[in-house]
Structure formats: structure tokens, C-alpha cells
Image (tube, rainbow, N blue to C red):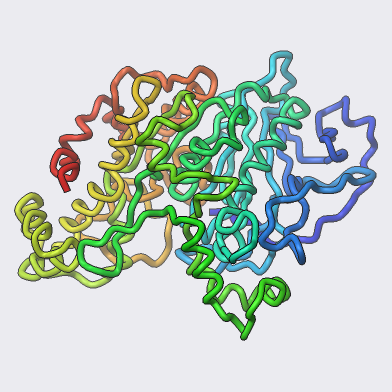
Length: 493
């Protein structure tokens, strides 16, 4: 995956007359930007959509960015927000990171193009907008793609008593980026009345948050949730415990007040700390908070009570989501004889025994694939099914089921039967990962998926009639999703 390096933003002088020439210079609401133009696409990077979140702006909702004179260099991608290294992601100490990238087809258009706004994943602690090369989506679908950064971890989801916006600054950043799209889409050939937000993992969870937030009303018109259903859970510390991604603001504020990092006893002291010192507790703040201005109620409650924005939505997941995570939890083989004990440790004694009965051993001598299947169904697949059921008739579904996709994460241990259609395995078929080899069948599947995502952005329909379309090389067709993932069983737990 291509990643952006931290960079200094400079002003460059480009002849303004080029604004009406090859489209390299575009006038935004804050000033001119000069991007990269080829025969097929235009690309603009590092466009600021909010003021730098530094000093008093640390742990404050995004503030308006000042305008600039001359022409801003937009030939470099947006920087990487401050984060620690994880699963091949690069570390960064850049707190000034509220920038976005824009990719469009090169040719001019009379009719404004649909706009697709990408929200990256990374567990709310990692990732960045510039990892995702959107040229396929833009040029093959004749759309404008905007990829956005947002504050992560301790910078985006920290809370402290008395601090407005506590626990949801990253979500507020996404909303600021969507407001930027409304103001500037037409300058890049896009239609602000036809905006689709889409994201994977934490990005998909973010889409749920924006569907539930009154502050997002009117900022988008369609939504795609990839491997991030509103009811997504992860295993907790105790057997059988499930942890939601959502936390009440009071809980996050209590966590922040008890931090005592570097001896700090007030918010002014914490705002004065160096980025490196805050990164020591980065992963402790990985849950967006509700009871906030950006997110008044839990998206799960909003989903279950019919309070999500009523727009067309596509919701999907991968067939083998949890193989990736189980390999990290359990890097060594789990003997078949240890399956009951490991199931009890993960699910609790009673439910663990039912899991052993419902997910029989396949005889390969390693029970991790059975454990991964059960965890996939409980935490990802059936919450995804529930989201589709709750959203009703204006929802489309998919399951990415190609089990031969190469790994995009480095240095993972062997896994019994392979990783299959692991978490995030659909991304190389939507975005160009230059160093990842795809088979001819996978490239054909990529063409199908890119067209479906673009068709949904244009019309609200991906192009299939099935409630859930299975997506695999040479095997595209309807899926019996609820049966395959035992959702009747998990719905009773």
C-alpha cells in the first residue's frame, strides 16, 4: 500500500490562466490549488478542509481554515495523521493533518459527476486517506472521489470533563470534510446533490455514525458500509464479553480525567504535551463517543429505532473477516483437543460448548479456523445481516467471498486453510494496490465491483437483485448469507 509521508505545505506560483486550460488549477472557496493532470485523470492532494488542530484547537471541533494568496501546491498527497505503527501502517507524529485528496477524470464534463467520499479504516487509531489510489473508481465510473483524513486515537477520540465535543472530534472532522464537499464539489466537476459516503472497517463504522448524526443531514445522499456494521463488536477481556465500538461521552471523559499523563492534572497541561508523549496512550482512545454534538445517540440505538437518515445504503462484509484478527490473537496452532477450552475462554462455558457443536472440527489439526468462523459470524456477519434487516427496502447487500486474494498485510503467520476472504480483502479490487498481484479472474471481478460501486453512487442500485450478492472470481451470484453464517443461532444469544 502506498503511504504518504509527512510534508511541508508550500505556496507555488502557477499561471492562473491555466485554470481554464487543462484543469490543473482549481479555485476552491479558500483559494487556488494546482494538482496533477494526465491524459486520463486529475489528482489534487493536501487540500485543507479545516484549520490545523494545534494548540487551543487540540481537542476542539474543527475550525474554519484561513484562505491563502497565490496558488497552493496540491501535487502531494495528504499527510498521515499522528499514529503508532500497526499491521504495516507507518508511524507519524503529524498533528496538522486535516487535509483531503480529490481524484477526477481528466476530460471535462457538462453534467456534474457523482461524488464519492472515502472514509478510511484502521480501528480509529491508524490509516490515512492517501493509502487509497482512487483512479480506478474515478475514471471507470466518471465520478469524483474525495478521500479524507480525520484525527485518530488520542487526538480524535479523547475525552475530558468540560471539553465540548469530547470523544468525537474525529467524527466532527469527517463532517467538516463533507461540508467542504458541499462548498467545493462543483469546482472539481462534482455534483453536491449526489454525494455517496463509503468506508471500510472503522470507515464503515464511521458511515454508521454519519447516518445517525443530525449534523450530517443533507451532506450526503447515499452510503456504503463495508465491514463496519452499526452493531459491530469485538471480544472483551472476560469470557463471552462483547465490546461495542460506541462509548457514552461520560465514560470517555472519565477515562481522560484519570489519565494523569506526564503528571498533567488539567486540560491545559495536556494540550501542551508533545505529540510523542500523547502517542503513549494512543490506542486507549479508539471508540467514538455518543451523547456529543457530532453524535447525539449510539448508531446501534439509531438503527434499532429507525433514526438513521433515510438514504439508499449498501451494506456488506467479507466471508472470513476474523481470520486476520485470530492470527494476531492466536499466532500458534490450537490443537483440536484444545478447541473446547479455547471456545469456552472466548465465548464463556455455556456458549462455548454450543460453538463446539455448531462449528465441527474439519480434521486439519488446528482449531483456529473454526474459532475464526464463529467469531466472524458473531461479531461481523450477523451484525451486518441485522443492519440490512433494520434498514429495510432501500438497502443492497454483498459478501466478498474470494478466498484467493493475496495478503495486503506483511509478516502474518501461517493460518490453517489460508486467510480466505479476510478483513479488508476487498480493498485491492476497488483501489489500485500496485504491488499486489491479481489473477485474471480477480481482475475481472475487480471490474465488476468497481462498476457496481460506481453504479450505486450514480443511481442508488449496484446492479443486482439478490438481497446479498456473493462476490468471488468466477462465482458472482446470490448468497444465502443468514444461513451460511448461522444468524438464527447468533440472534438468540
